[in-house]
Image 1 (cartoon, rainbow, N blue to C red):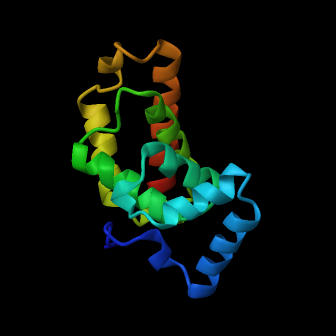
Image 2 (image 1 turned 45 degrees about the horizontal axis):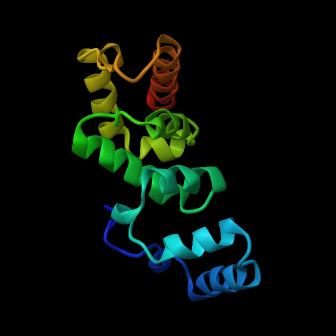
Length: 149
């Protein structure tokens, strides 16, 4: 189990963290190195959904971001957050390697069962169009196929 209260910089070696600092200083006018330095001072539970998505996009702390997304879905017993990031969170989760997803198989199985058993996609009418529902189901299917043993 990963300690969600640890600062992300604690997952880096001293040399890696020093490189992050130097990059942020050298490229202070570019948002990515500055953002990367900022998130290293946060713990997983402090990251926004956008930060988690961006971690996966940028391939930084990808395994930790995956863990945190699954943790939040499991805690809230839903993969829907009624906002724009929900779809992208599922997209990014579906893009993760099967090996990484298999480490969280029981939670993902529970999430998928909850979505399918309770027809949660159909209940998302308020904020999800039909095309988005299909796309969301496609992401669920991708995840299911990746964790099928």
